[in-house]
Image (tube, rainbow, N blue to C red; front, side):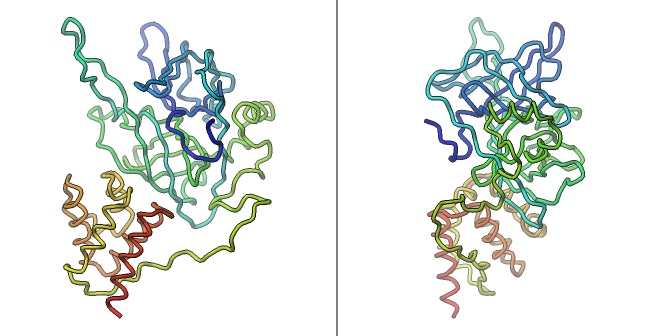
Amino acid sequence: MHSSHGGLDVARAGEILVGLGEGRTGRRGSGYRVSAAHVLTAAHVVRDAVLLRVRLDADRPSESVGRARTVLVSAAADLALLELLSPPGGPSPSPPRYGVVPERDITLACSALGFPRFKLREDPVPQPGGAPPTQYRDSCHAVGTLAALSNRRAGTLELSVPAPREDPDPHRSPWEGMSGAAVWSEGVVIGLVSKHHPSDGPGRLAAVRVDRWYLELDRNDLDLLHRHAGLPADPAELVPLPASPTPGLATAPPTAPPPPAGLPENLSWRSLGGLIEALIATPVVRDAQGRTLLLESIRPEVAAVAQRSPALRIDVINIVRSCLHYPGALDQLIDTVRMMEGDSTAMARLDAAVAELTDSDT
């Protein structure tokens, strides 16, 4: 049974295949399965569709591709609810939880899984008769941050994620096809990817906020989302972020957040071996896009001088070495890793390495 509290489930992230009729090139988008027979996506993805299909778990034993129809479309909210005509078998998935981002000076870790244009690949399997290889779009797990006070007038969330290369066609965005992907933070859905604004640069995406749906949709549409997607009937029931305890559950007293790293100045290069190994052990650092996002999130001077390498260890060494040239930059790097990594065994190891360096200086 799928859990309603487990956050993003890769098997429920769908590719939306849109047919636009004879003589017109089709369109692709992303979506998320919110019940046995329903998928959320962006309204502009399904605009003018004459044929809709949803692909789940592509090239896996549980892959399914089936036709769908729209049961709700709102251009104002850029939201569509699709019904699968032949839902996959197996246990019925529970709906996700939905959350609201407060209008405060905070930054949250977030992620989205979709199928953008820059993930277009050629199938390595030879085609019969020497035919050209077929193409497919692989998944993109975009992991980044959002600043809560950006895009207030538009009513969207601004996601900062690792930037892909510009598309060879200057009229196309590398993010085409990512629209409709559910945006997650702390295990709840807070929006759907809606647009890539070229003026924001390749590393930012806009997502329509879940709480905005209550302003843009009428009561009938909200009732549909409540019945088929699990959206709370009342916006007051959205999970507030940063996450708060569930009412009625016994919880431990709140603890203060970890203090800044506070590393001593003039660290010797020889003393940093344990810290570098602990950094390499964290998932966000092991991911090449994650390292790029870390650099973009700290002092711009560090990103400008760091000599990047495709080799994990060399890349991390170069980033740490560059941080040492700027007072406080290594602290900032570690604090950003902490924000993106959260509570984990790898983060505990990194904190221990920091504590060892700090204690050795006292």
